[in-house]
Amino acid sequence: MAFPLISSTSSMYTVVQPPVVEPPRVENFRARMESSSEMIDNAVRPETASFEQTLLRAFDAMNAQQMQPAKLAEQMIVEPDSVDPHDITIAMSQANLSIRLAQTVIDRVVRGWTEITNVR
Image (cartoon, rainbow, N blue to C red):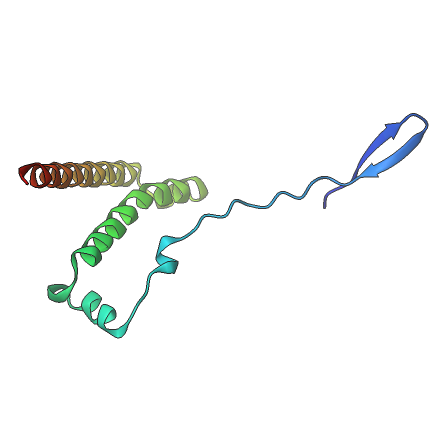
């Protein structure tokens, strides 16, 4: 429960309500994506998946690996006996490796694209 602030102006007291602060809104780019039964079929059958779907699936897997150490650390704070500290260390190493691998792939794709555009 928030209490109003009281300020004094000369001999009168006035009640001032604190400003309402709304949480920031972050636009989700996937909410704008179109879907169809063909796209669902492609997502289920990896051999027909598009390059975009393959990248999105890889980024989702990388994001899950990035979130795992935070979940384990939170669980360790709540229930210290339920998580082995080595599991957190291993999860952090896997997350670090996945982000470095993604960075390497991105760098190689950019380098390849640059070479293709320079060959023209």
